[in-house]
Length: 507
Ligand SMILES: Cc1cc2nc3c(=O)[nH]c(=O)nc-3n(C[C@H](O)[C@H](O)[C@H](O)COP(=O)(O)OP(=O)(O)OC[C@H]3O[C@@H](n4cnc5c(N)ncnc54)[C@H](O)[C@@H]3O)c2cc1C
Image (cartoon, rainbow, N blue to C red; front, side, top):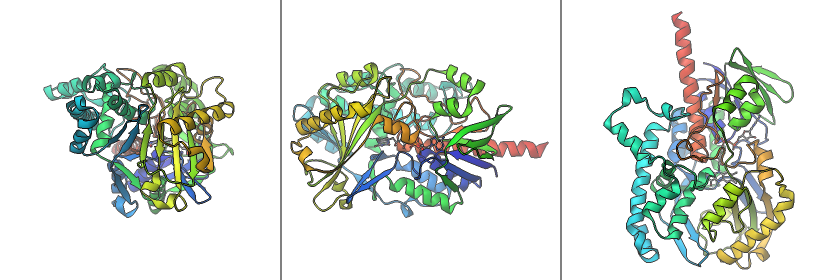
């Protein structure tokens, strides 16, 4: 049994803690905030309840696997409801399209909406399924940093493997892949938004990420009763049952190393605690830059250029009315996706006419707002923090842009008059609350036709006995991926500890 310290109690940190404790390790988690769950935080005011960060839960099988580690059934901890339609899409021309999980229902919808794309949509989903399967086999559930980690080319080189490599469709982008199947710009805009789960531009991200469409459409969109916040609460309960120690309000300032091995944590209060192994759920770039430093950090920086994924502005609006035309999850799309992506990802400026994601959870759980009201969550993606971005100055004007957009394209002309409670989250808030890279919501950008999907691996190549978990480590951001990264970090650590113990015993 090894003594493990975990820095950060985001979803990745919690999944790692549960998995390690279930396998018999002694685990202490250090979290600088007062709550556990990181970005999956909660805001409650005057009878309105908002999930502050993630609202769309996909791939619950990842979470199930964490509970199964401890021999537990997830359904004893979480009540998940499957949502259909998965998203409702509102377009600038006034048209509305529901994304349904049922391919037959979708065919019927598209036969009216975009008759030329019925077959193309089906073709796209088949490609997405293939990409998701290949990802499951080669990319998920193990520590991966680059192509050579995904498969042992020399040992596994077979016709099947070659077919899988070809299926990755390198070096095509997400947009190019979608454009091969779908011609209607509105349908394409909807499909391009799957890539927003990783906060990156479809014009610059590799086609393999089209697999995300299967992970949502094929595996479902789920709402945990009690809100997304119920997920970290369930993990906290499991962790406590397994004996994990949580220390909240403790900021870790340094990872001590000795002869290339991580050996201890030093907190902002100057406390030094020795560990056999350390898992960092802090942003991976900042872990090396701020906690490790020295040659290991220089080596990490040199290994690859890394850029933050996008950030965002969230408006939490407590309303005194419901909007019956909204589904639980909605997108109010920009007039021009190229203009939008170019602004956010190339120019580093807020989009002049943005896409707004809206969650209206009262559709599924009445208790989120007073009778007849709505706890409306509005997320607009923005660039990560650049020099000169001062959101205390930028927010009032951008709030106006967002509310005008919702009034015009989202069918809510009286929205502003119906606001009873209003709170906001800006890129600067995200940066400060969660210690991320330049305010990024989704870790590191997935840009690059060949290498875009690869993130820093879960077993550090620079520091022995250091492991990385969370949205800025492999396999990437979003709830299921951050949870999986925690599981992988724990599994890798556990295997290393076991083989190390066996080697010592054999001496
Ligand atoms: C507004 C918003 C909307 C989103 N919507 C969705 C969505 O709908 N669906 C989806 O799947 N994903 C969504 N995401 C992304 C998802 O929330 C994240 O990918 C995921 O929660 C990240 O988990 P993580 O493990 O990386 O940890 P984080 O949530 O980043 O938490 C890391 C924790 O580590 C702590 N920490 C950092 N450094 C230190 C230190 N030195 N010492 C002590 N503690 C430290 C931080 O305080 C934090 O609590 C959204 C995110 C945001 C912000």
